[in-house]
Amino acid sequence: MSTVLILPIAPAASEFNYPKILDHPWDHSPITVYIDNKSVPPHYSPTYYAQVQKALNYWAEGGNGKLDYTPVFKIVDSEKADIRIRWAENLQTDESVPAGAAGDTIPFIVNGRFIRVDITLGVGYSQWGEWVSYSDTAMLAITKHELGHALGLDHSNDKQDIMYPTNEQINNTNPILSRYGSLLLFAVYAVLAIVVFLSVNYILGRVTK
Image: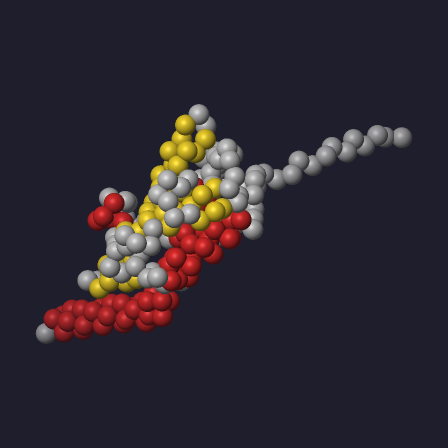
């Protein structure tokens, strides 16, 4: 009788990574949050305040499932809060933030804990000389992402995760791009086709002369 040795099959390593800045960044609860709705830029919308509240609820209810703790928030009217959220007209020109970023989060760390986090949220961007304000849906996605950093999460490589480092979610919820994006792309292809057609006709005309 032969003996068959059955070895356990090791589970395949996940292709996705969800790194953290800190596992437990806050040493107290609740985490106080100040949302500046007084010193706001010209294109700020009062509806953005509600999107921040929704983003806080998102993380308080479990978020993307990658936190090792359940955050409890308390919105306060004090700039001495743990998390301070303010707004900028254009992050690139006002805050020198890299192109493409819609929000910026700066944690202040002492002895392995956050003592304060400053979040700056852009309210839109300039495109082809025209101002494009972020929709409420886009602002919600931006705020969820930045609050994820304020809770200790770093960027993940999962495109479906709110912590993926791209503004793809924002673009997908931008009313201008979602409404006219395909039309603009069609217009570009049409112009290219016309240019190619005219160029070929020009070349053929010169050859036949």
